[in-house]
Structure formats: structure tokens, C-alpha cells
Image (cartoon, rainbow, N blue to C red):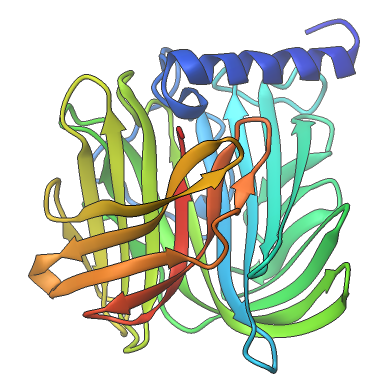
Length: 349
């Protein structure tokens, strides 16, 4: 690839953004010709699988956290590194087809702070190494000797944070031993989580520094064409209940057929039970005016097989990610059959 590198980066990100409208949110339904695709029976290999998989088109390292200060004021935190490839290879120079995008956010009951970073592969500006683990884009970093204890930091124009995360339970594999089906036709990703992180550190906001503690949830996922072309958007929920159990559930919205759902029930000890399409449901109950659109910020979520019938409410309905490809993401409270806290991501609104 030749030409002005900065112009090239802008052009490539514009191309990715345009594909989002034609092939579902963020282009996740676009053609995967030439890339590897997930298959059942994959044998996960750690620490290698904490690192990057350049043979696949799409990948992310995704941390969300529910926090509180000494007075009990709630906060939310997000740290995400996305990798997207134009070709199934990697190089250590400007010819690299790997693109990187970072999102970071802090949510309070009254404000939502957002920052974005963009980079390309091959020049050291962003990347991931498996052992010792490090994921970075510019000066944003998630790093540790392994995935048992990591540091996390990011900064934007109106916020920064510096956190320490310590795993208190095992990794959890979604779907069929980490093969997470996303459509009736069999589209899928490899998907595992670490939902048992304790987190502590300091938020720096316009009003000053705040010491916080809480629980964090890390998602790891990679694929090449996880969605069908008509699966345009999704609603994703992570729930941490006060009794120690956890639940991940999502709905993939389809413009040409039935929506597709899946869920994982996680016991307090980390034992995972996968639930297929139709077992989990999430119904919007109330909407808020956000960024010029109406977005559901109160939900009813149900998993009858586990007795779950809960109301999910956004801590701050204005948790809009005004990034290159915008979406809603923020902390939520949970009440009903189970109580607790969690995170909600909604795309395509």
C-alpha cells in the first residue's frame, strides 16, 4: 500500500464505516472470502488465544466494569480494542492490512465521557501480545504477566482511569465450548469471557479524582463473518447477580426473518450452561431520547429455565458512544427475580 499514511488510514476507516450500512452493524455480515472461519471443536490454546488472530477478519478485547466510590455512588467503565483486517495476514511495516480501533468510556449517573483512538498495524502503534499479555493502542493499555492480574488504563479529553483487575474465577466459554452460534444458518464466532474480575483504581473526572472498586467483565471474541447480511444490529446484556451467578444474553435483530438469541448461565463457581435460540428473551419497556433518536433504556429480560425475570434499567440513559460507528453502551441496574448490576450494549438505533 502506497501513498500518504494518514490519508490511507482515513480512507480505510471510511470504507469500513460504509460497509456497516450495507452489511449489518460494523460490516460484521460482509463477505469473508480468504479469511479463516470458526468451526466446532476448536481446542483453545492459552496463553496464545489471549493474543491476536490475524487469519480472522474481526476480533476484540472488551472490558466493562460496574464501580462505586466510598459513598456508594455508581459508575461504569469501558475499555475496548478492536482489530479488523482487510486481508488475512500481518506484516511489520506499512503494508500491514490490520486496522485497530480503541474505545474508552466512563459513565456516571449524570455524565457519559467517551474517547476513541485509531491506528493501523505493522508500525507498533497498536497491537496485542499473548505472553506476557499486552493489548495497546497509543498510550491506552491492558497488560499483565497473564490474564489472572492485569492493569488497565485509558484517557480522553474529560477523563482518565488507571485500574487493577484480579481474576476471582475461571474463564467461561460461550455456546458449544466457545463456538458461539449467531444465526440459524450457522454463522458463529469463537467467544470466551472472564466475568470474575475484581477491579480497583482511580477515575479522574472534571470534578477530581475518585477511588473506586467493583467488578469487571472481559469478553474475547474473533470471527470473520459472524452475522448474516440481514442481521443488522443487536442488544447484548451482561448481568452479575447479587447471589454470585451471572448471565450473558443477546438478541441479533434480523430485517428479513426471526431474531436470533443465545445465552450463557454462569454459576458462582464458573460452571457455564449454554442456552440456544429462543430460550432467552429481552423486551424493551421504555425508551429515552438519546442523540436524536429513541433508544430503549429499560428492558425486561427472561430466561425461564433459570427462573430469571428481571427489569434492567440504564444508570444513565445518555450513555451514547459518539464514535466512528456510534452505539449505546452503559452500566445497568437489575431488579425482579434477581438483583444486581451489569452492562448493556445496543447497536443499530
